[in-house]
Image 1: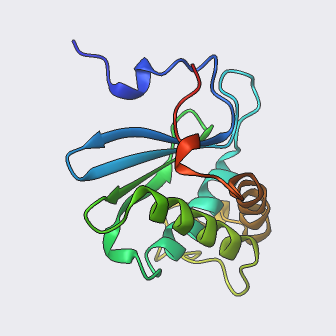
Image 2: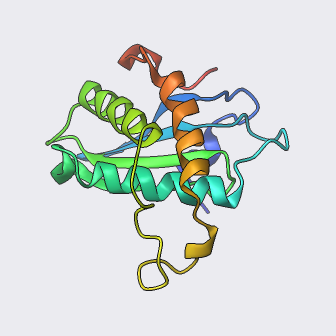
Length: 154
């Protein structure tokens, strides 16, 4: 059986950052790594869920929303994947978009998007301040990030 692409990345060398995970035709997957793998320091379910609701909402309401395919958490609780259509958004544009939405999420005001039993299957797990704190940390990490920094560490 073939190993999936993400299993070929050396998780012992990964550190928090933004990486080009794969290209599938016009679809690009970015790895938004928040935690160093296999250290026991993981994103909590509430941190993952709250950041996901904020960022997915902001991405799908951005000027580049037609390029957005998916944003969601990694099962290992160390980050997120962002998939986008490269015909509609360049790598540099995707970095800029992520920088923009993480800064917006860090300063978000109003009710947590999708926090009701009608909209979400685990709405009680959502916390706006938790999501904002996680997004603020990653926004700071992404400041000044460039395409040249998208390669996984050796």
